[in-house]
Image 1 (cartoon, rainbow, N blue to C red):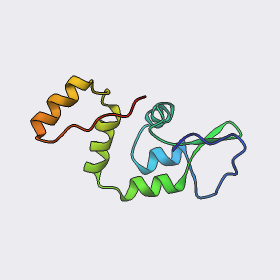
Image 2: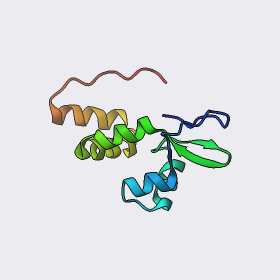
Image 3: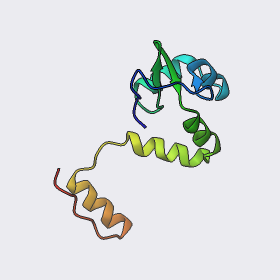
Amino acid sequence: MPYRQRNTPVRASDYTVAEFAEKFNLAESTVRYKISAKTIPSYLVGGARRIPADYVEQVSTADPLDLEIQRIVDRAPKLTASQRDKLATLLAVEPVAEAAS
């Protein structure tokens, strides 16, 4: 979920950085880092960041293992064609041709 524009209306159910950090037992600096890395969606309201409640609900109900797997996948570097072929061989699947970028 991308950053929202400055003039997006704030919803009372959305979280401040401090509220999000407290809910998930994180340091506020960690939350701000994740926001800057765009792994936590947010939007500005009068210079303060807000985190959408629907994202918080999604994270709250997600399986921790699924979240960790997704985090690893999101941070993995893009594979070269050769690496994809080797991985396909190891997994015994047919490689799918990538769309031209």
